Structure formats: structure tokens, C-alpha cells
Length: 224
Image (cartoon, rainbow, N blue to C red; front, side, top):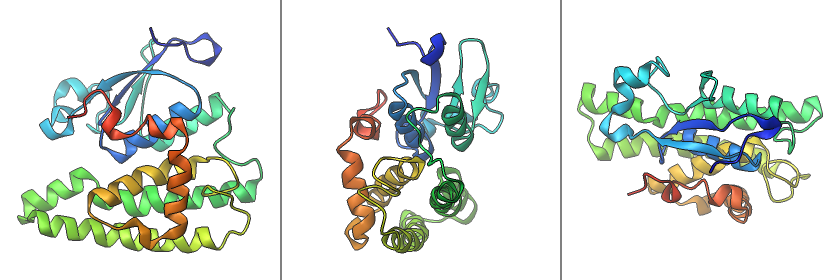
């Protein structure tokens, strides 16, 4: 039986795809908050997310999406993670100082706005179907944008002398929530993460925590 959410609320349903970075980051955030959800797999490979049944939940036909037992639904992982942070602020995933919060949000935006969207499945499917891109071309496209973004992120991490093991400070923040799925994606596309020592070290620190390990794609219920 699922544990109730903090405050006595009923468990939420989490609609997600095991390998999607946005779904992966939301699973991590829920784990860090100590919140359980009813896992509902949505297999993007069979395109069930494009069917009308799913679009009643999310008109965009994208994952992740969440639905509370009272029927309220939310979409977009940044919005859902912000909701979690605001409704259940402990443990905090953002620092309290406004300048530090802006720094963490900049790291998040670099990954969530500048790296991930360009190697998102629906973008790659467009290149495959509209331009006939083969897997070699698709892989090269992904590696180009992932590498460029992580090059910049590495510089930002190394420039922060106050870091201790994570993207900011000495405990996980939303920046780590975004980074670990992106590192997973980089490895899937054959990128050697060892070229970024700070990023590799952050990922290693996160993998010591159960909240990150249990969110891994290979451990989800729809894993092959």
C-alpha cells in the first residue's frame, strides 16, 4: 500500500517513461522529498502518449504528468518539482539565499532548457521522419548538444569553491536532480563522462544516495 503524502493527502499517480530524463528527474525529486507515488508507465516507444486517452490528462501528449486523487492534474517536470518544493519545503532542494537560488536555477536551466530539449525524443523523431536522419546522424546530433552543454556546466561547477560533492553546497539540490538524468542520457549516447571530472564526481556522490539509485531507469516497473 502506498504511503500517504505529507499532510495526510492521498498518493498521487505519476505517469512517466522509464528512460525519459524529465520522468527520471521527477522520480528523484519525489524520492528526495520522501514521497511515494503510484507509478503508471507510459511507453513512448509504442506512442501511447499520443492517443486521445492520454491527451485528456496532458493535451501535449508528453510525460511526466501527475494526478492527485481529487482529480487535479499537473504537467511539465519543472512546474511539478517547483510545486513539490513549495508545498513540501523540507528537505529543501533550493538554497534560501536569493543569489544562491539564482545560481542553482541557472544550472538547472542550462540542462533543462539548453541541453535536454534538443535531444528529446519527439525532436529526434521529427528528424528521423521529416529528414530521414539515420541513427548515426541522430546520435551525432545528441552528442553535439550534450557535450557543448556539459562543457559549460563543468566550468561553472569548477568555478565554485564552496561546493562539496554536489552541484551546490554539500547536499542535493534541484541542480543534481536535473544533472543525474542528463549524465545517464550522455552515457546512453556513448559519451565518456570522464572528460568532465566535476560532473563525474557529482554523479558519483548522488549515486551513493538511495533517492537517486531507486529512480534509475533500469529499476522501474516497465524496464525491459
